Every structure is written in structure tokens, then in C-alpha cells.
Length: 87
Image 1 (cartoon, rainbow, N blue to C red):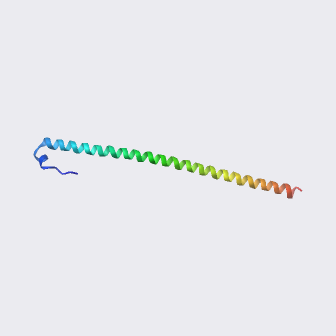
Image 2: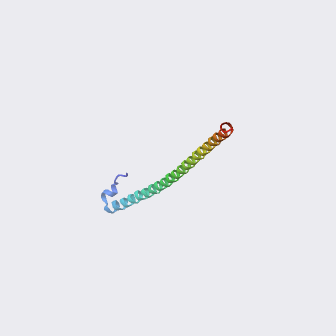
Image 3: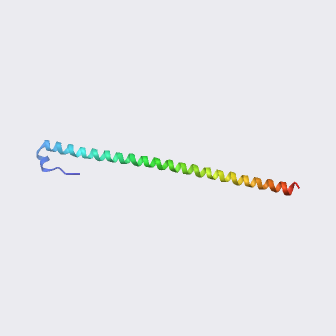
């Protein structure tokens, strides 16, 4: 932060003007920071949505594999029963 200058110490008008400039600068910095935070929040939301989609696809893949394996085992048991037990 900038220190008071000699002009500010002697003139109230100069002090007011410099303070106005300082506050304007601080306000611009805060607005820039707010825009960056909003951007980061949007990015986090996008990443979260992508992770949720990937998780959903992974779960669907596991269910499909499970159904396939159970179907294969059921068909194999049926084949074995028909060919070896009921003959």
C-alpha cells in the first residue's frame, strides 16, 4: 500500500484525490478478482459434470459386464443340464 505523500500532509484536497484514486484502483482489483473467481467456479462445475458423466458410464459398463457374465453362466448351466443331466 502506498504511504502518504508530502503533498497529502499539506493539502486535504490532494489527500482526497489520491484516496479516490487508491479506492478506484482497489475496486478494479476486486472486480478482476471476482471475475477470476467466477471463471474458476464455472471450470469446477464443468469438471464436476464431466466426472459425474464418466462415473455414470463406468457404472453402466459394470452393469453390462455383470449381465453378460450372468447370462453366459446361465446359458452354460442350461447347456450342461440339457446335454449331461437330462440325457
